[in-house]
Length: 70
Image 1 (cartoon, helix red, strand yellow):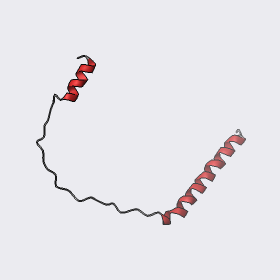
Image 2: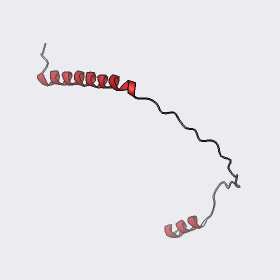
Image 3: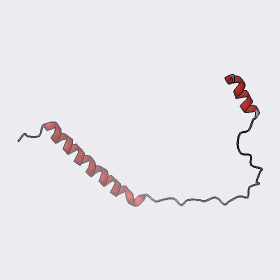
Image 4: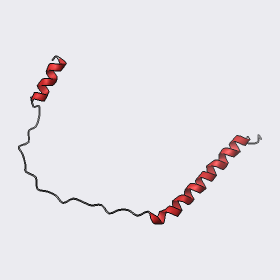
């Protein structure tokens, strides 16, 4: 069988090393990290406006048509 090349051995070492260091860092920091409570805003009463649905021809739309040469 062929022996592993030094670059593959080095790569395996670096993979294991970073896994160990990263895992240790997570374990060391975990007790200090706490979730912040979520603040839910109270529902405010809204004034219901007449809802318009569908196509609306407004000044903005007319300006677009003029600029686009429709």
